[in-house]
Amino acid sequence: MASNAKLSEDWSAAPEAPPLAYLQTNNILRSALPTTPSRNFRALVTEEGEFMGVRFTWQRVDGAQFPQPISDAFSQLATFAGLPRNWDSYGGGPLKQSAVATVIELIFAGHRQCAMPHLHPLSRGGVALTWQREGRELEVQVAGDGTLDALFDDETTGEEIEIPKKSTLDDVKPLLSKFFG
Amino acid sequence: MDDLPEWAIDDAEIAGERWLLRRVPQNRVQDGIPEKSNFREDEAGHGLSVTVWDSPQDLEDVRRDHESFAVICVPASAFRAEIDTVIARAPLEGNANHCEVFPHYGQGAQKRLRKTFRWVHRPAWLPDDPEAELFDPHAPAVESTEPPEASI
Image 1 (cartoon, each protein chain N blue to C red):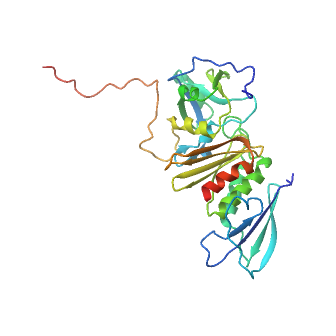
Image 2 (cartoon, helix red, strand yellow):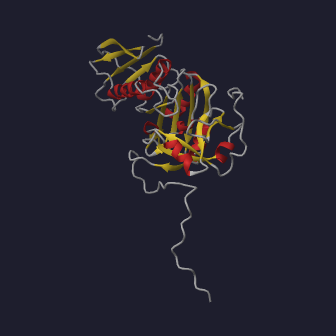
């Protein structure tokens, strides 16, 4: 079943840019995360992708290839989608389509910050995404129904911020900004 | 508590230093440490599955048909430290001490529970870790091999 969710992503492979720093904007999370301004005079081709019924678009700039880390993440998600019933021995099920759009948004958001998350499956069709950087950790758990919760943890300061279950992406944005800012 | 089913009656005797067993799949271990999501349950009407480790039989029950899984344990006191915890007996065929723990914990509680875990069974897929000792509260106490101090 196709989802109504539509994600947009533009990127270019600027030769002088640091590795993976070329994702430009994301229309959904633009307000939450810092972005790099686009360069002018580039060959832009809009392309579409689809993963588990979630469609997304991106700008292929100067022939840039789809980012390998994102392809790798999709491969992992495909593995989660293929998990057998009771894979965790406690009645766990495969990745649910209702979680996928949110998970992809978070993967894009992390990639724009040169930080691909570690992914692991949750029992009831969700996915946990974990980023670690300089003593800080952010884990976002996307439940099978697409709702989220998060925990930001800074070992150096002892600061811990928790966003409770059944929250939305908007609720989690401030923690993304705090972690990546 | 909105996710507590009627059948779930707290057994207050499951407390303190009684240990609760839980299986851990390979895809929920990162860098040799169980992910905190091993303490997450979302299913309405169901709590987190654990088994009270009262005897060696309980560990056999937990591992039966799931030999490839790691097994950890957490003291009941760690669950009791969380607000509104209910540990309800929910015996299964071949797993008489099976319980379900409510409520559905958020990540803060999951993290606190993980801090208290001890390894019970480490399958071959786990990386070697000399500091990861196996824990067994039912193992006979090892007598000291040191000679007794001479009395003067």
